[in-house]
Amino acid sequence: MLLKDIIGYNDIKDQFITAYKFNKLHHAHLLMDQPQGASLPLVIAFAQYINCQQPIDNDSCNLCSSCLKYNKLAHPDLHFSFPYQIDKKNNIELCQDLYPSWKNQFESNQYFSDLDWINTIELNNSQGKITAIECKEIVRKIHLHNFEAKYKVFIIWQIERAEEEANILLKSLEEPSENTIFFLISLNHDFVLTTILSRCQTWRIPPLKLEDANKICMNRGLQYDNNELARIWQDSEGIIGKLIQLLEDNDNHISEQASKWLHSILAQKYEVLFAMSDYIASLNRLQQKQFYKTASTTIRYWLIQNATQNNFKINSYNVPDNEQLYSSVLYLDEAIYHVERNSNARMQFLDISIFLKKQFA
Ligand SMILES: [Zn+2]
Image (cartoon, rainbow, N blue to C red; front, side):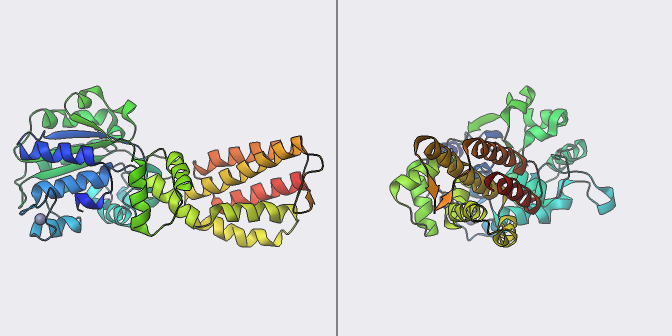
């Protein structure tokens, strides 16, 4: 992964490259990020850069044997740890036992969230953990000779999920082994142990700039006018993965589908609902939330129109009274909450449709 392939974050890239060039690179870094942020691709690109045999123009060459292995996430001196659950029945004891899933997750969407990962490894009712045995494995690997790389790299994603077990790593973070670099990533800084914090150089991932959002659109061939893009960028809170998802959602016609849904219920065309449940099931969680949020916003709009206009109609259909509209909004807001908590997409969609049908009848 090249640094230039990650749009934005130029300040953080420059600071890192300068530290490396002046031989001032700290051996333990903690990146404070949010779900769907840029920290994971950034640290992989940094690690590739410092191991590149012929770096050029403040980036990796992408041609040397080290770069080729980094590109496939198959370098023997690159190690990842992440939350998981020990499952002896399926021979899962350490993170490396889940490495194919981890690699697939990153290759399908490098800005994936903690929830995406939980879903990928099918953890039910658990957030997973970086276990004591995994922490001990990291310490064991530190003491092995590097296979071939200049720097052995440990990337620990969601260090806060190691909880107290992170203390197993303290000595290694404090007294660095030669040519070993740690990149710790936290998505919830409040839970990072202070003992860990005090041993790392910390970096806060800043929000993506609007001008970079524009570059992302151009790169992906998405066309937005400036106002629309600014609105989506604001909704994304400058989190790159969220922004890309929202941009693509708009491309998926989420608002159009949400409006079609509400109008079908108003028109009592319920046969559409079953086909639509397939569409809902095809959306990821953030897109589902976006779908219900759009519907909720539309009903709020009806509420206002209903209160301020006599005989307000939508496509010649009478609008439900305000009490019914209000309970519909509350029900949708509740649904958005459940989308975040692993509800079944199809069942939930039908449940809300039935509720709205009763309100709109
Ligand atoms: Zn290279």
